[in-house]
Image (cartoon, rainbow, N blue to C red; front, side, top):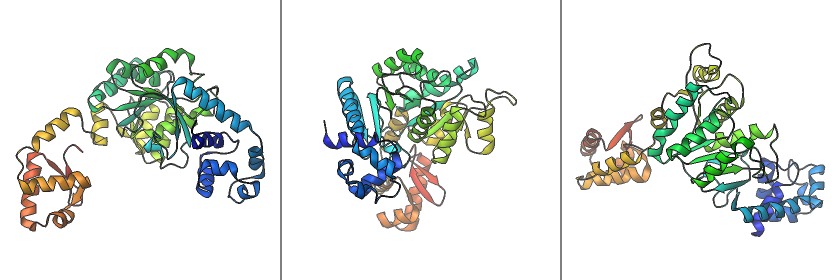
Length: 367
């Protein structure tokens, strides 16, 4: 049992220590273990630490809970992920509200940048199920990870379609691993693990689902995904909470449109109308907006690089290193006369090797 891992879990179990205060304490004292060793007078010097919070440090409940959590994790193959530690999802690291400790059961790649959340109503229509299929099936080509919340309706339909299509999927839970919720989806959760996906939670294994846990669960979904797509939703509910969180976090949001006046899709239409969401009809819309490159596209691009001359190859290498570059940056790196550089750019653009961007910038095609 790693001492720092134990200390981080214990600190996360102290009542009233939320994500922001956890980070403030660790930043002040240098490590979770140092926080636990701090005297009450030292703790009180940190802004946001009240007297009642300090009193909780004098007991041992948080220490016993940390011991129980880590013993359960060790016995059941659960990974304990500490913020700024190995394995913690990089997509969450920039958010102060992200959980400082997460528990992951399974093999899902939490570092996968090609992550899309598919969420929606618990009372999914037949058309909604067909829309889920149109979204999920093509994603197999892109090695994407589909995230959802294991709930009834659109969530579990997305997980099941991933299992059928060979797309890895991650279920973010509002409870601990001893309380798969809803219980009707235990077999789906088991299949997710067996087929290379995963289950993720911020709660200890014994934690039962509580009403307030689900908006908290939704924030993790919104942070993880490069885009959150709402398939069917009225103007309220969990999927709308997730979509609005994703928008606030600066993530992309998509919504599948529906008929005017149809309550099943009134929330989707409202998201599109407000400008918070892109209209999504097919997985191709997601791929285009996120500029994902599929396996076939990558192979085709490699063939485009065949036959490049020396100067063209140097320009391509610059774009690989810098992702995208302005004409001035390329001129600085390559030292080519402006007329020669313009000719190379035009040739590579016509061959489909590079793409022009606003502001006289360029990037490799498919990136």
